[in-house]
Amino acid sequence: MNQPDTNQITVPNPLAPGDTLGIVAPAGPVERNRVESGLKVLADMGFDLIVPDEIYANEGYLAGSDKLRAGQVHRLFADPAVDGIICARGGYGAMRILPLLDVALIRKHPKTFVGFSDITALLMFFSQSCGIAAFHGPNVTTLAGADNETRDQFVKTLTESSSIKIFAGKPMEIRPGKATGPFYCGNLTVLNHLIGTPFEPDLSGAVLLIEDLNEAPYRIDRMLTQLRLAGSLDRLGGVALGTFSDCGPMESIRGIVADCLGDLEIPVLGGFAVGHTGTNLTLPVGRPACLDTDAGSLAFGVPAIAHL
Image (cartoon, rainbow, N blue to C red; front, side):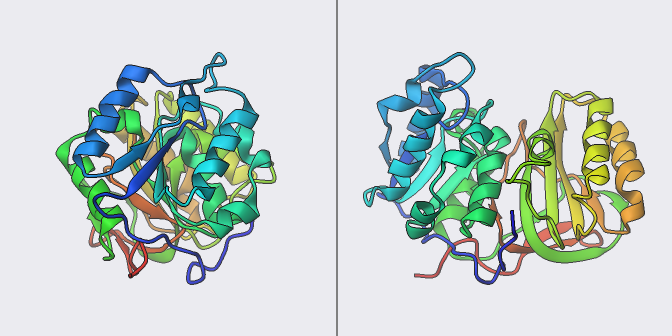
């Protein structure tokens, strides 16, 4: 994929109470009770909801056929009654629908799109292939058990046309420095599996935040090593680390990252509340950001959403 100019990327309008969110299941099958718990959270936030029956389709480890799932995405983008889209869950399957997605249709109807984990494939696709900002943030099923900080920042990011600045809770400086560039954020495993495909993201000059779940330390090493050998990180601007839940001691992750990326001579900072467990902050993918290890911060110099 070719990285668009972050100053030219289309940003969605802010959401407001009473706006309508469409729910999509582009990856794994969903559990109705978990979805309904998350829908109640969204309703309590003031959003109206469109919940297509198709999201409950089930074909083994997928929420229905590839054609069905891609069709959900198209219909919600094209529907003028839908102001924003949030994914029901991750799991696996989002990258399977990438060849089926209509770039022109999505570009014509830019709107807020939120998800994480396996949804990383779609966040990269929307920001790089379609030129629209997307949001790395909670899925419907994770909102149900999310803490107040996750919920509050989700609403603030999507409704307020203001700049975002977050701080590492326990800053873990691996290499000092400051880097400014387009911000990309997602699951390390999914990013790794996009290598060699037509949808491999261009990370030139980028600030990249990575997170993962249930991966042994040697697998984290293997994925970072593969990204290095493939040349995917050659022109990277900086790296931020989210949570690596059940991936071994964080000190082990720190050592692996330092060993695999230390010679890139770019700032690397861990400790951000983004990922599968605990707080999961909502961040705009494709927008310019500054990673500053001295300040322990990740700051977006422009609003995540448009001014009305």
